[in-house]
Length: 289
Image (tube, rainbow, N blue to C red; front, side, top):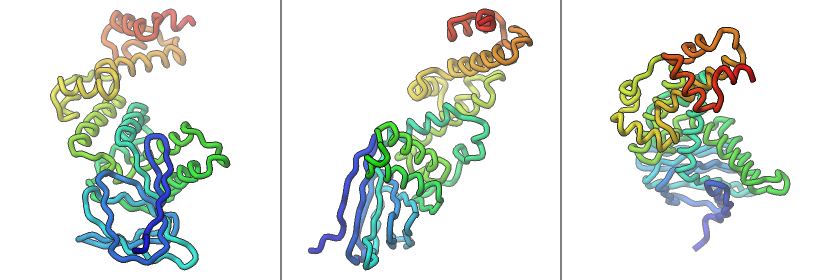
């Protein structure tokens, strides 16, 4: 039997790159993925089929197949060049880590990126968006030409993180989470963090946060601590102290008392205690230095 595909594997931090080359014509060649993978047509095109539809997977297109579903492909390689497809596997834990990192460092100007939008869940994802295929191509080029790019694991990790960030801005975000339970928990925590970042100088109740997360107060504390290494209350205080530090540096003339209330604290005594505990200096000494 004639071999249909040649596979080359490249290891990367937190994942694996696979390149599949096809030199022969084939019809209804089956494939199946249990976990989300990100694919890019480097050259040529394929016809993807399932029970419901068929569509063309073109060069410079990014495709994330539906998980746990039988698919088949038709391939008609060009006479001069094989059909070449890149398949990227990423560790689920790393995807979750990058997503949490983006939310932790959230900036209001990022609202327009669409990361926090609740798009409809999709079974598959396909796009010819230039930022996506360029990001995936850059990762691939860095890995296969290590001498030219002087690639290190650090640079590969940066390229991988950029790709995940670009995917977060699309409907692909919903496929990258494997289970409904994981996605529900993660989305709930992200909504809580986003709300805190927008309102940390205002009174915030744990009841409000648990309602946003869709879980009990005890479960919110447990899940939040696991994901962000602090409780929701500690997270709010950290943001308030950071805001106070910026005011002490940029506008010390408004006075420590005003900075205390401007940062969201109710009493000067509590502000002094927490500021000293977190920074190692009192607000007065921080201002002098």
